[in-house]
Image 1: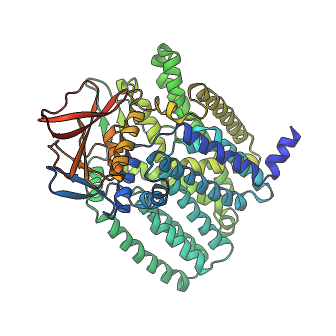
Image 2 (image 1 turned 90 degrees about the vertical axis):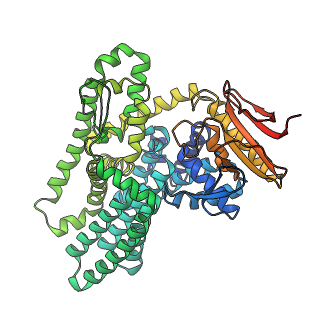
Image 3 (image 1 turned 120 degrees about the horizontal axis):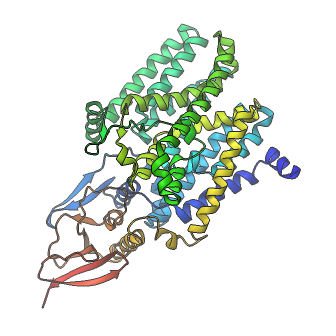
Length: 545
């Protein structure tokens, strides 16, 4: 036991490497590429073909349009570009590699933060955190790669700001802070407001610790750069439409007829979720004891909310004792914990400001989609909050020796380990294809979609003819949470046709269809190319004889 403790306390490479390996192994064996990623990866393929970050579409096979996709910023596409090129357009592997890269970036940033935060104890705190990340769903595994990239970038900005104020206000650090502020919304549009908040923190600290003749020019130039950057981002039509929708429907309710509003808030227990993923607990109780779940779900939610408030309250009480009465030297001395708590507050406050009292009716809590659409997806929006609170909890537990936070972390570590062990009874150890059969409904649909995309991609590479695809029953704008062939076909560099047509001599047309659905009534032969569990692939030939 002593040797294990010494390893955690002194190790520089073994534990980080092992934790990163576990996360990447988990990503390869259990994580599927989502609809958002597939659409963006499709634009990357077309970029590599010289078509820009667009998707190709036609209505009749004659006029091909390049559809510009503005639903997401370009950071994910730029990051994934070399991986798509190296893997030859294998979207499954490209997705896993980008996800692993996001873990690596997070590890680097968190390690740097603990070097400043933990003093002589920083290796122990860092290694405990990495082991926690590897075993528990919270606070890392329920985040998508772009969430981790963006939250890591924000935390890195905070670290640079801390070094700039406390250590040495070099021009390089100031440029670094402004670069982070400008880059944030190019990773996620939702971080536009957070980038302004980070700029506000910079302004506040400069006014506290610098002279006016120094900080006024800095803030003036920074404000101009932020405004120009914001104008560039918000000029996109998608951003304007989305922002208008949020402003008009800030208070919304997912309704069920004749049911009273429960005010099940999206943010009812955020700090609890930083250590114990609520959707895992609710899902387990519902599957193991449906009767108990029906009777006790709201009572359990109250318990989670209380624990969340307790965690935040314990932290807040320390901050109040440490900083009040407020003096500049006290703030400078404990600046990094303050900035981490501010980051968590920024994430929470902006979600409250934009989504307000978004609720779900009581009957909605019992629906099968509740755990995914409401709870697990919502946790992604709290990525910055979860990571900041977690880092602070480790600091409180092992630097300030707060017993309460030690118990929280130990409990979370045991919970995560037990859940990880359970998942390994469900998933194969190394067989990704077998595991992908069960991560998307209907069972087998993900592998069918992946195989169909791979076959069409192979046909495109080995043929000079223009390849057209038409997934029957899917629309070009579809991007829901369940993966269908159309999303993988979008990544093949082929042309999506909104209606099937008779291909000409220099054209090939493939149709994906769910079993049992009717093929189009055209005077052509339908040659089966692939027969799957859920979806089949056909190629249309010339006129039938």
